[in-house]
Image (cartoon, rainbow, N blue to C red; front, side, top):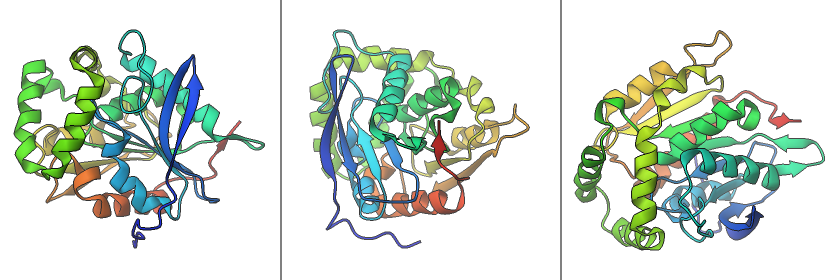
Length: 276
């Protein structure tokens, strides 16, 4: 599927106040019949990490990528948020952004890395909050649920990514600070995503990079297998592996990732997209 270039992308920054915290997001609010696509970034980074892919979709679709509380340009809470708190805030943000006279438009949720844990927690708590999921490099693999192992794998990924990404990650990590990064990592490691995947009813696409040392093809395949197996009404999970990609697919190869998402949005998701 052709995805337009991003030169004329209508992305803009918006802030939404939730419980006294100003939450920043990059959005495109062009009129569109198709459901919105909402991106959630990984641990330590921000919506800037997702922006290259976002920009390629923004000319023809309503898209958004928020900065989770404590990351990017969003306000920092007094204590680092838990996974549960991030999910609750995302649910409230979705209600605030997409509420209209018809009800609340259920988006397609796209997560990268830790962002996958956040959106899976969202649909576990509020199944009607999304009509489809794209899980790109979903953490945490139960076989490697260790802070030392995860940090080592992230470091192993660095030389496999474009060097221009280093400046983006360094700035976002500096902004978040070591306390937030370590507390969030510890909380993410406690999450049992493998126990939530079987109850997902929405059509779900798992996308991985064949060169990703953080999230292996084996674990991505297991995620796709687990999705919806406890439900008779589930659409189930499918998987797509990008041979040239490592962990940062949304930044490193946005053309490919945008095309994958656009194809899923057009062919893989049931409609209508309104919950009341």
